[in-house]
Image 1 (cartoon, rainbow, N blue to C red):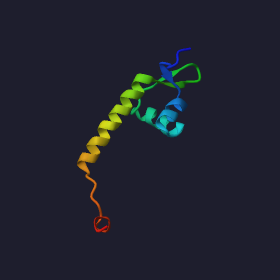
Image 2 (cartoon, rainbow, N blue to C red):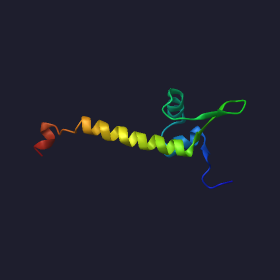
Image 3 (cartoon, rainbow, N blue to C red):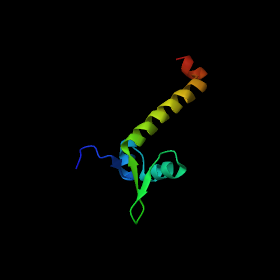
Image 4 (tube, rainbow, N blue to C red):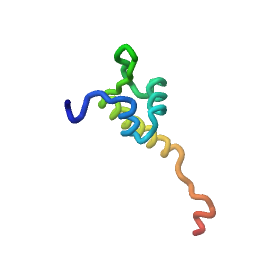
Length: 80
């Protein structure tokens, strides 16, 4: 078995992202995180490269959000 398997379970992805399996399932079902469904019971698998691409997209989206919504200190924080 390879050290870094090509495909990850939703639980594996949740561990990498430090979130719940339910949140990862929602990402997959919305199409935000590409995955495949395998086997008769329809187990989901996420390719490691797709997870890395997703993470990079989230960094890019976060950079855009921060650029469009700059942090402004409140008056009470500025007077400290």
